[in-house]
Structure formats: structure tokens, C-alpha cells
Image (cartoon, rainbow, N blue to C red; front, top):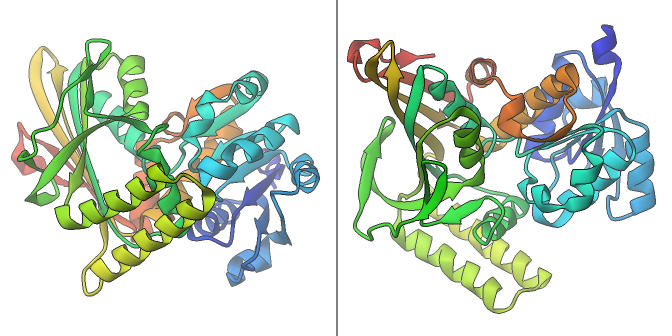
Length: 370
């Protein structure tokens, strides 16, 4: 085996859809993997045949540290990341491992982890949003001599795990971004979204209510690549469902506790399951960009229609892990910095997980899948 791939990757949370998909991708690409589960055993025959499967209690700090010391890279696919992310990241970095988290953006605020990552890479938010979303924004900005503005739209209508729903709930309170904010000329500015505002974009045929929500990842993209204006919107396909979800978020805010958190997440998962009965699940990310190329104005649109965001997150996390091992940059990084959009796009489309369309609005006949 190539020496590059001779390093051992420990994958935490491999019994879930994200971790299982990531493990399969890394094994297929030739990496040696040790995969862990907590309570639900790993049943995937391909993983069981080609990887070492062990039970791991991440709440046992001594056991977690010992596991990390046996690996050179740790990929964390377990959740909720708001609850366990810092713990796993600290153990991995302390053990001298590369650390990649499919979620985990709240870790950016941890001073101990910031200090440890000076010696080795720590990659956060290596999933779909953030991660693939930032790679898509960079992909568009790279098509211009000067990218002046990007509009980002996303919405999700799919079943979720309770751990993922907890992260959705907690992310609305901080870590992922800020409501009613946008980025312009180097500054974050406030703007209330009109209650009646509805938008359409490439891949979003039905007008939907739009809620301004500035993702921290996109601010990082804007600052790094000199984009003057970024607006990002969470789209609301069904306001009634959104209101019910908001009620559960309010219940946790009023009485914050782990018990309330899990109960609210459970109710939200069940609501989504009922709502989706008989409907086709989908997760849509759509971007519009404008700028200058060869002294002429240019507009581009990019749409990703994702059929299973958990599996897409798993592939993104696996590819980010591979690129982290190859580059081995130390320091804290956003997931998109370790993702090449064309590589990810090719992989997820080949697996039947996504349809990707890129359109030059100046040349409408050029629209097509990539």
C-alpha cells in the first residue's frame, strides 16, 4: 500500500449514515480504517470485512484518549456535535492526530483546541452545510477575475436523526451564523427580512419565503477571496411546519436542559416524518454569483439537488480527510478549504446522491449538469 495511505484513520460514529458512508469511501480509496460504534453495532458487510470495528464509549475519557493514540487521523462523524465535538477534538489533538469533524463548527471558539491545532490540522464543518456549501461558493468565485456578489439559498425537507436535529436546534442559537445579517464590503450588517418576501432560484421552481441567515463559513469565504457582498437565505417551504419547529426551539430556550433538548429533538423528528409521508425528500442548495471576467460583467448560477444529505456529508467528510492527510496543513480550517468542489461533485453524482447544474446566465444554452 502507498505510504500515504498507510496511516490509520479512526472513524468515530461509523454506525450512523454519515460515518458509514465516510468509512466506505475511505476504505474504497485504499485507507486503513478503525471504525467505532457506541450502542448500535456496525452491520454494513463491506465495512465489517475491510475495517476493524470496535465499541467505543466516548464519555470514558481514558478509553477515548487510548483510541486516539492508536490512530494518526481521527474523523468524527458522531453527534450531537454541540455536545461531544469539543471532547473528541481535544482528545484527538492531544494525542497528536489530525482531526476532521463532519460537523463541529462550534469548536472554533475553544481556546484549548486553537492552541493544540497550531501543531497539526483541525478541520471543522466538513459536511454538506457547512463544507460543500463553502466549496461551491469558492467554485463560483474562482470563475471570475473579480467576484462581486454571491447569493446563497438552501432548504431541507428530509428525515433527520435526533442527534442531527439537536445540532439544528442549537445552531439556531449560535455557532453556524447570524439571523438577519449579511456581509458587505468587509462588514457584517443587519437587515430584517420582509415577512412577505419570496424567492426563486435555479432548481427552486416554487417561490418560497426566505429568511436571511449569514453563515459564518460564507463570511470566511468572502474575506479570503475578496468577495464584496454575500447574502445567504434559509428557505421555508412550509411556514406551518416551520412554526411548529420554532415552538420546540422555544420550549428548549425557556427550560434549557439535556432532557428538554432530547424531547424537543424527538418531537421535531416525528413532525418531519409525518410531514414527509408520501412526499419526496430533498435538500437543495442554490447559488447566484456575479462579477467581472475579461472586463465584462458575468453571472453564474449553481444548483445542487441532494437526495440524501447524510450520505453526502459522509462523502464530503471522507474526501476532506483524504485531502487533509495529503496536505497536512496545521491550524484550524473550515471544511471547504479541504474540499475540491469538482472532486466532490463527481463523487456524489456518481453515487446517485445529487444532481448538479451550472448555468452561465449570459449564455442560457450552456446550462447543463457537471
